[in-house]
Length: 72
Image (cartoon, rainbow, N blue to C red):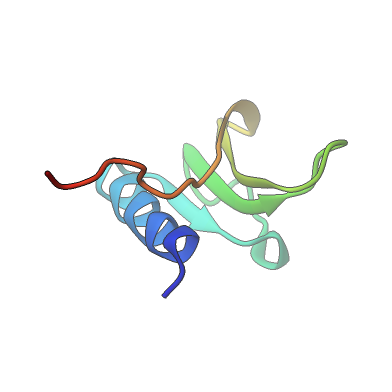
């Protein structure tokens, strides 16, 4: 599993725990819930890992990055 895949799984889990509905672009339905997180949302500079919508309004972006902390 790549570091980015692992980060996405952790992000999905945290978003779901917080009550977000997670969707891909193919299943896009902004009416699916009050908060919808859309994976791989297209932007002018390339796809955002997650675009966050509240009541159908874009309110934020999440970019998945590998954890750069190291064990000592």
